[in-house]
Image 1 (cartoon, rainbow, N blue to C red):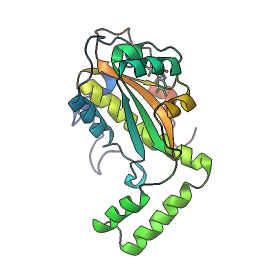
Image 2: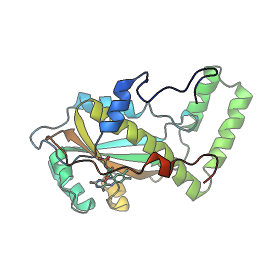
Image 3: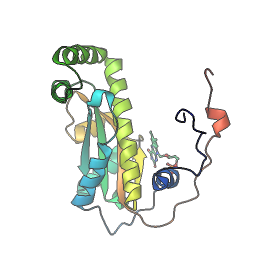
Length: 219
Ligand SMILES: Cc1cc2nc3c(=O)[nH]c(=O)nc-3n(C[C@H](O)[C@H](O)[C@H](O)COP(=O)(O)O)c2cc1C
């Protein structure tokens, strides 16, 4: 929606063109440079960018497990039903989401400390938020929604840094959780193969048209 009194902005009139270009050119690549791996500084940078994602009440209910040991990556290929590009990538990040609002105490304290809520409101909103996690289904929904937004940030950050990053759900979730000793209150959301690009990728498949996916007011 445009600001009051302004015409809607045109397709080319954007404040951050590089951001639009990045999200339009990002690819889930399979062509990694097998001879170079991600360094620690870059790994930390993409995870830091991932954590700038929005989350429900800023709970930040996500975790990132980076696997780069060659033998462990080979095991991970088996867990991911033979997806060999994990090995070429050199690093895989298993992104997990909390099914339990375990950051709530700390985060709602921060809302109150920053004077965004008074103490009583902070406590009430925290209780409502915690109650929202009660059913198993609700907990998983929260985990998936919030951590998926962090995954997209991570993919865009990798792309902006000239890396290739591919999100994957083609893996055995239980085996992956066990493989990284994931705690009971966290579920695997997406596995990301990430590393320096090995060059061109096949042409992008078409996207459904805006006319097809955009519904105004109702379906
Ligand atoms: C939830 C999800 C699961 C995916 N699982 C896999 C996967 O297991 N292996 C893989 O190579 N790519 C996987 N992809 C990548 C998709 O194939 C890819 O995003 C899609 O074909 C569009 O291509 P693009 O990302 O290059 O635009 C997955 C993507 C998403 C969002």
